[in-house]
Length: 155
Image (cartoon, rainbow, N blue to C red; front, side, top):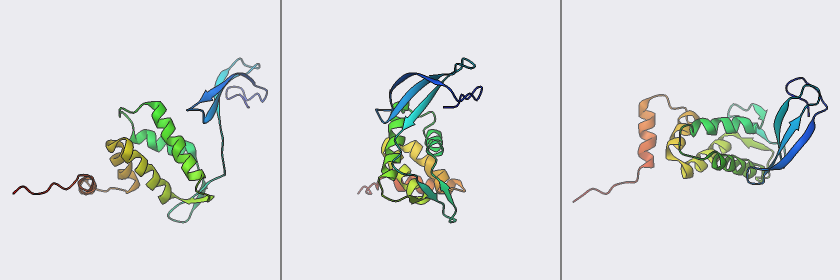
């Protein structure tokens, strides 16, 4: 592993332990060249996923990009970081286990929305506002009104 500080390719692992509910290995590393210390994470990757955008463009799946968008939606919400990490790992495992290498971005968005809806309604609406490209306050109003259960009229 290359040192992020000096670029030395000969770094040493000082400590390894399970992370994220045993779906990754956390490694503390040391660079004998500059003395820098850093952490790496090693995860099992079942297959290389490719995201097919709505315009047909294709790009490699980026777990970090998924994580950033979910963290933004959950920002300042009462969700523990461990639960967020489990959720992200669960989404990635679900995508990898679909059996397809090419995954439409729409499928990823729907899975994220479905997961967020179960965890936090505010984060769900935040993510949906970007995913569904809300343009005005009416878009929010319409979306939120669909979330509310119908109240029968009083007689």
